Image (cartoon, rainbow, N blue to C red; front, side):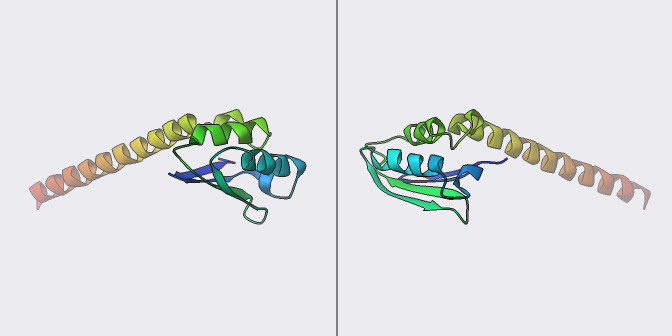
Length: 117
């Protein structure tokens, strides 16, 4: 995944290749975010290729922030928070099912070996 979104109420951190340098797109996104009502602080970190936005969740939604970043050309359409959440949920579900299956196989193997000893 070339983009990463970490969100807690009142703060969102987005990592993207677009923030790797102080590009025009990154500066435009920073300006547009600062113009939104409810945004308290915007920090652009070119070394970490990220932007962190502190905002008032009562006045502004995460989807509004991601929309501004997408419109500025800093995020692809695949970075929409609902798609990211869905993909993360699928991966977690697969990992959980894999762990349960592995445990069942281990238990069956122990039972089988115990029957022959």
